[in-house]
Length: 171
Image 1: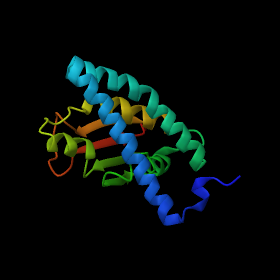
Image 2: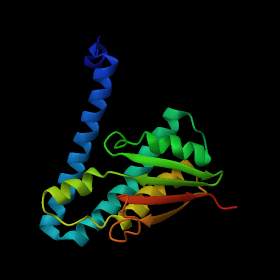
Image 3: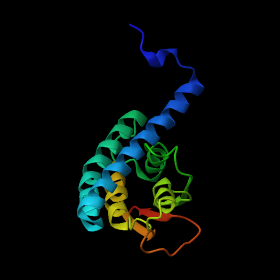
Image 4: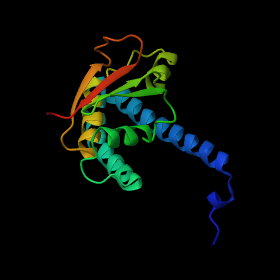
């Protein structure tokens, strides 16, 4: 039996991947805003952290399998996995390998923050969520990773980007 996806060209499939990512992000944002409106920002952040604690590990494990990374894939494995995350097609990012143990991940654009600004909402103070999201994602790729938020709302130290994360393998 033919699947509807079998009829699509490569370009249309790539376009559909972006549609799926946008749909997922819209759902994530709608879910978050619903909790924020009903229970306040602190409760929404608490629930967001709980959801990311589960989802980011699932996402990382699926990317490990898809990419054939194996256990403790190091800096190169993290680079590959970060570049294929669900929302990777939606934000402009930069991944820099500083040395064999250190990777920097810079989010140059952020649809979440841009949407909040468009709606007249303040920046989402995402650092506590990001520490869980990115920290567990990296530890799933390689259990040795230590994650540091160098610049992330509400602690902006680099105004040239929305957030900046450092992943380091200890010596």
